[in-house]
Image (cartoon, rainbow over all chains, first blue to last red; front, side, top):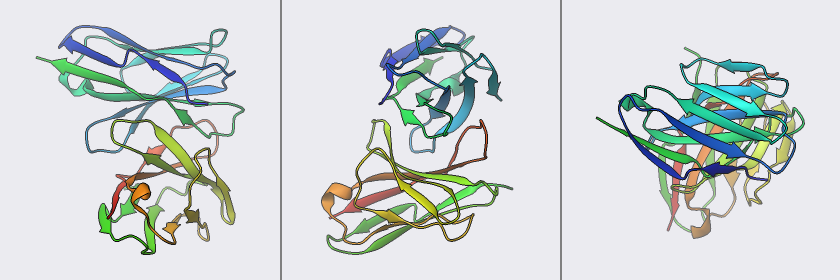
Length: 110
Length: 112
């Protein structure tokens, strides 16, 4: 089942903060976050695992509330390069098959 | 440099033609996936593979087929293309364990 992402779109000025959310009605094993720029492939940002472990390689933080089956991605001191569509991918059962939400469109303006 | 390659990047083809979308990765990943994405929409899993000679259908019904004869190669075939197949097709791979996906640049298919 596809996760639900909110808000659909965010416009913020360079340096401002934003939070985007991803929720599922199913019990999750992990949540992935990807960013896709127009005309490009999605790029992996972070994985959050059941039990609290996080793995990522960008300076963007996230949280995973296992009780609520929700994840939030925190864009802090946003840069122009943060613009794009953010997709969360949810995994049940540790099989590494992801269901993706419709995405959060983020536009950072100077 | 380790990467994942998809060809062709763009394809316009007539109805009824047979096409194969190529996907190759140089990272030695066991797991590979095909996703379909319409403009501005979510990605839908259409096929996946956990290793050589292992293929499964995904959550979205698709008339395409896949094969996995070599670890690095995961082609997708449409036997008879239709306008409803017009979409972007993204190939991805991941290492065993809890790791993210690496996506290819995609094939944007238009069937006329």
